[in-house]
Length: 169
Image (cartoon, rainbow, N blue to C red; front, side, top):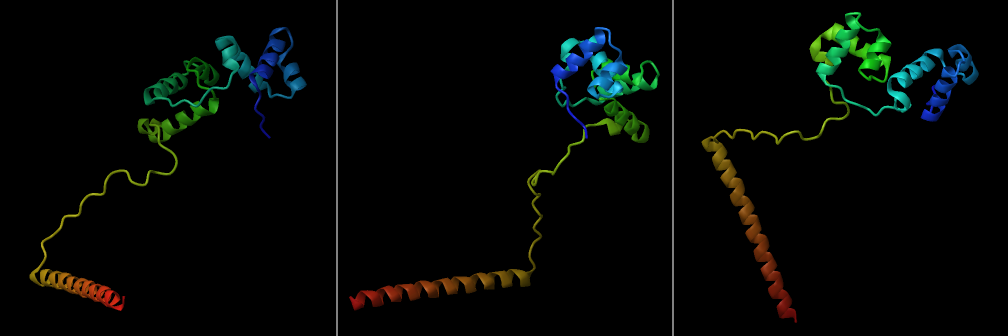
């Protein structure tokens, strides 16, 4: 089970190591992996106390990702050093970028939207109305006239009903 450690706890462990205790001793005493403790120490040495606070979710540009990948692939920097220099919170983030870059090239580094797409992106395009044939035009007119007749009959029936009510009073 993974635990989230607060900034105070991280700072306490880092200071304990810097006061002379070995990484192994501190990690065993507080049951924290050595690699995680080393990471906290690196962040503390580079960024101070602010390096121990959780980082907010950040969107990185394609150019930024490419610089970090090239620094790592050219063996200029190790994985951890590259993450520290470019302030990338997790080694796995950089490794994922490298994997995508090697598999699919530069276009794979673009930020892709996640989640459900919006229902209506643009207004639906109007379908072009083709002219009606003579038969279709006559059928349409016939349908319209039938509806008009029905409406007039109902209107007349309502008028007669009102007349009958008036006579009853």
